[in-house]
Length: 112
Length: 110
Image: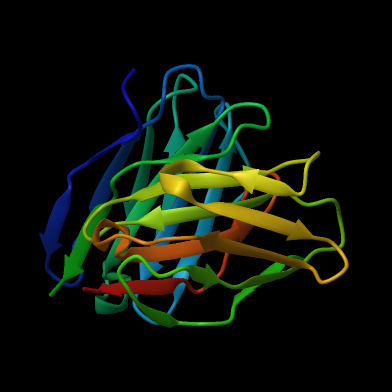
């Protein structure tokens, strides 16, 4: 079956622009997670969805970051007014029950 | 709160030699523990997991890990590495959201 997919795979944008990153989880997975991987910071948790609700958004670094999930499936992470420090790989993962999270290939974001 | 410490940022080994990647965790609740591998320019792939039961866990690609509650460790081992094992390895703890260690870069020399 298909794994977690993310789009775009690479994104280059200019400082100050908004970007949207998309995640398609594995079908039937009720939980969805966003992580950020950057040099020197390792893997940072951003937000967790259970269904369409986000019971834990404690990792979002600022109010420029937001995420939503619709239909218990696709999720979009939006970064407004991007800054150079937002450059990173954004990883999405999904799971159900107590299975381990399965990760997508990531979106590599570069803010110039 | 939960935390993970990977004691080595880089581990160089020769091909066919054994390797151990160290991981210590801190958690105030029952833990689920994981090792993930990340090959260059790819996402994370699950190597193995400990949820409960036997403390020796076997994973893919010949890797295994042992859960040691008294030492709060979950070290990853492989008896004989191959060039293809060159990657970054992450230890993680958690039930839903995972807390990751900083990663260990494993390089295999011929």
